[in-house]
Image (cartoon, rainbow, N blue to C red; front, side, top):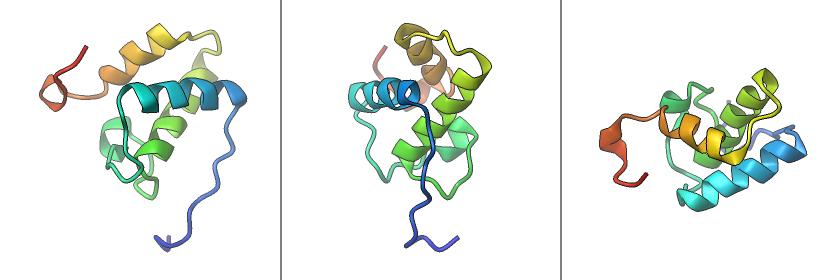
Length: 85
């Protein structure tokens, strides 16, 4: 995929709302490389990868709330990647 072309994301309003909370809480920059940790396609930037990862979790369980999502998100990374909880 041409890196100059941004893929368009089709995500639910709940994904966008919870995802933006994650992005703000963890200060995830757009161009961070989280795809390997979140197991999503490497064509996405860090914020897009976060939203796609969350969309997949919500497809599995639409009743997830932010506290659960936050915990699941942190479990994707080795503890050495962060110093916050």
